[in-house]
Length: 265
Picture 1 (cartoon, rainbow, N blue to C red):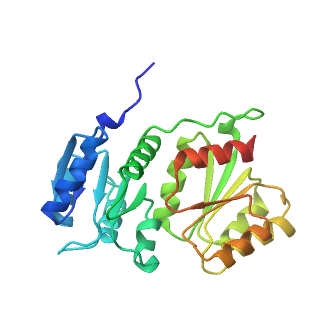
Picture 2 (picture 1 turned 135 degrees about the vertical axis):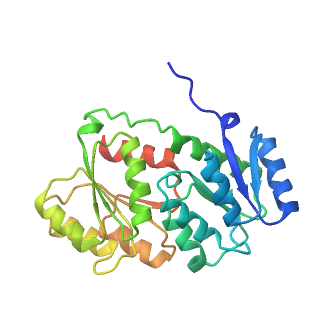
């Protein structure tokens, strides 16, 4: 049996313009067993280093002289060589509008400055779960025979979710860009799971859940909502509409695996 990757095996590219901050974060990484760390002071330098030697994980600040962390991860997601490299943001940025592009790009974690070492440890564990996910083990069905529908208006987010659910063992994964496209697919095909965002054009996640529960041919299909939405009133309305489970972006992969195990067994 092949030995699984450990935290000590991870190679990390730390992108941080402040030399003092780089040293602090490197010390925190060393304290949890990570010693293979390269540093970059700008987005351009980071992209050059990644092309020469792709790391297992990019840990990045939000703001550089040449670009933002959002622009860095979006550039990575558009490059076939870099698109699947896990990305972790470490930033004092709190404004939801500024953080949403990072969340939508499919990131492993967003840590504040300063962060607790335990939060760093959890984020690194999530990185390992993303790189080497453990397949779902369902009691009453074969996971590779199940059909999932991912509904999200962000192409980056759809790609990240597709990769994640495929590696958890789901063998048949379809995609839709909004609720309207999802409805068309639901009218044509059977699905065992729907994974949807909340905020989408034409038909949002709540309207999609309402359609599934009250108008579709599969009203009992499990619906997992993975969203950046933080408004309690909106999320409460989604729960009342009949969503099966809610997850934040970014999400913990082991938590999602556990939720899917409950929903699909």
